[in-house]
Length: 104
Length: 104
Image 1: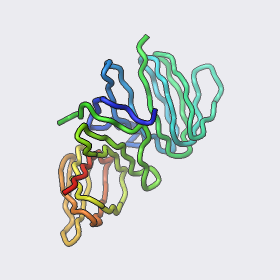
Image 2: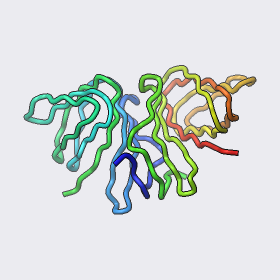
Image 3: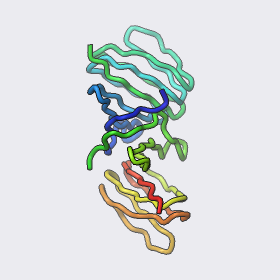
Image 4: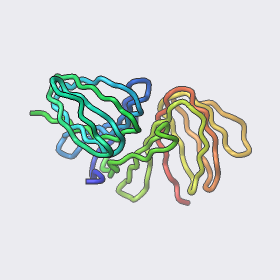
């Protein structure tokens, strides 16, 4: 899916890490939510409250989930983070992502 | 308006200036188009093909239209750029913008 239809998008961005990570929130007709974001090169730690699907559609990076080794993504890749966990990212080139929030 | 409803949004971002300027394209039911974007601190030159409304909803910056003096925007402000012109920006803090493309 290269675009999302019939959605609501917030005009104002979410800004983290002094703007090195930014996203915009998209709400779907069924009430589910995704954020579309950009990460500039850098090292980041994030925390989840619900399960997240992290899909990358651009960029080169490594990610580390709790209790697992570093994994590399080049240009495109997807991983899942359980609720209430932290994960680490090392972003090497501008990364374009879509994060889906999954209530279980 | 703090959000846009019933729109189509591209999953992939537009990336300029090595990621220091990024945006996502939003298409409205009537076919008109806006981009929602972020500019990190820096100096930029942009060109228009159609008339553009540049609305800022965050950040501190100065802009210069052709034949005019530099003007300052703090947190929020709006300006218009004619079609087929260039304009200059000096962005001092992370700037959050909404650009509307106006066909005349």
